[in-house]
Image (cartoon, rainbow, N blue to C red):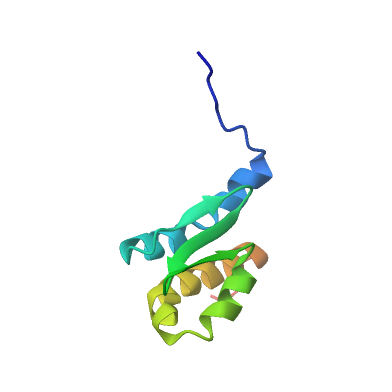
Length: 97
């Protein structure tokens, strides 16, 4: 018997995990999303398979498609919030009394 298993680096696994909110939104609308190696997302939209290597390219495409904007709006907003949380340390202020 031959056994195949995926052996991804930590970076690849993290990159694939970062598509999770978008993947779920696409799956909920039955757009047949797939995560391609190493961490590209693809899905069927208007009869064609669309593929994106990163979220910036996806955002650029989504801006030209209002129906897709509506589907991914929540996932892309969540993504921006997550990035903001990772990129900035919370500031603490000392207050008097």
